[in-house]
Image (cartoon, rainbow, N blue to C red):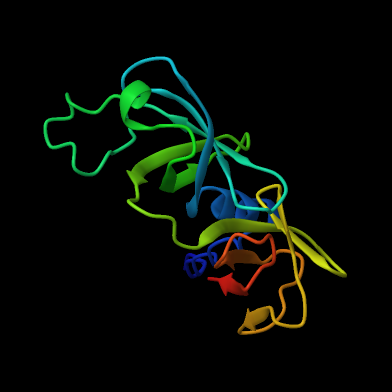
Amino acid sequence: PPPPPRPPRPPPRPTLNATRRQRQMCIRDSKGTVENLIASGAKSGTLTMAFGNATGSVTVILDSNTMYPGDDSLQQFDLQTDVPSGAYVEVKAMQDQTGQIHATRLEIEDSPQAFEVEGPLDDFVAGTITAMNVTFNVDGSTVYLPRQPVAGDSVDITDVDGDGIADQVEIED
């Protein structure tokens, strides 16, 4: 008689590189002010965001995949006239494998709220925390949810008043 069929192989376990790629493709949510805008068209270009007194900035690519809330016709919105320097904006974006950040949504807020950076933890040393190349100071009043982050964590850093000190650091799933 023929030998019994072999049981199916279990699916491969994700590798560290696959996990990093997956994390890089996650949606990122940042809130800050427009430091620089280079429009290459009415709805495309690059936007650099600043985060109060934190050091560093985040540059995002705006293109045909970027949604602009309140722009029902998609013909009315114009980066050159509708996004002034210093405007407070919320950007949802995806980071690709090359590290470029592509905005999926850009919303101009009426008034500044908290400054916020969400992304992979770059560095966490005594007195500072860095994510997405933006560095905030931390002190005894900084709240960590649910714990202090470690290498490999994705974090959401919030600075309520723009003083450059992280008020809250939350570990993202």
